[in-house]
Amino acid sequence: MKRLFTLLAAALLAFSAHAEPLAFGLFGDTPYNRWERTHLPDLIAAMDAESLAFVVHIGDIKSGASACSDEALQDIQAVFQISRHPLVYVPGDNDWTDCHRKSNGRYDPLERLGKLRLWFFPDDFALGRRPLKLERQSRDPAFARYRENVRWEAGGALFVGLNVPGSDNNFHGTRRGGGPVPEFIERSAANRTWLAEAFAFARSRRLAGILIAMQGNPGFHAANAGKPSPGYRDFLIQLREQTRAFPGQVVLVHGDTHLHRIDQPMADPDTGETVRNFTRVETFGSPFFGWIRGQVDAADPQVFSFSPRVWTPPPQAY
Image 1 (cartoon, helix red, strand yellow):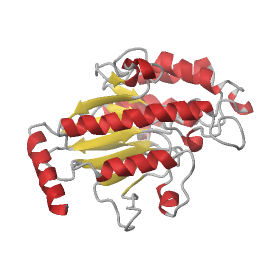
Image 2 (cartoon, one colour):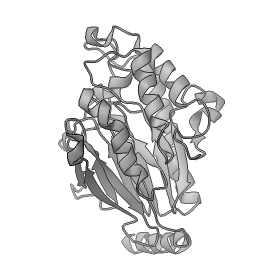
Image 3 (cartoon, one colour):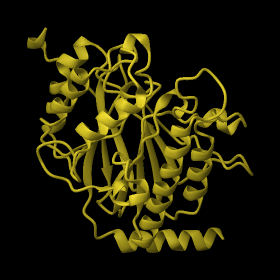
């Protein structure tokens, strides 16, 4: 079986090696405060100064204690639009699930999610000044609401955006306990379908890798210890099964816990061994300010590589 897997991976790389390597940017969990909001255009300008195919913000465009007002959300949408590169955004918990908090203005989370869909995902293109056509799950009438779930092919790999936020993936909604709320159940069904379709598409196209972007930290170490969070349990099972069956490399990019890291935390439940074709990348998060430069090269057996870029103001900015 291992020999067959190796041969399949080699064939996949040979098929997709014609794709030109390209670079992209990753950032998220920012801005959380006035300083970060002031310098958000500078951070975007730093990415603009490099040759990137696109950039991805993995959610949380405000802190968990600040207002979820129309003005706050539209302000960040306007800043995203100044990006020279196409900018793909996936929602975070601070952007909608936690908006019911008193400090956030006691908004209805589902109403806020509706506004995000209206303002950040108005058509089939990414934000930013250079166009990037995206395929949205909402093209399927059965999942017409889920405009935030996207995918696009680039550099011999598939890039996928999912609405899987922090706060346990909105498992409990605004309640303090009990079973899953209807919103979680319905969105999870959409996410399961979108993820399965993404892997099927990548296999059919013989793509060298898949990168999945979402906001919530699904808790790999707790899951490996047999104590998965209920909001992420089924997602992690599906992700592991799909990854083990995929001959290329799989990357999950998330934020949520504000600890930049690049590791391989997925374990085989039968043997406890590390799943070697899976990598987790967590972006910088407030109070750490920066971005990650990624590269995809289908001719490289690892397919993806990453380098952190911490941003600090130039001397004249003080």
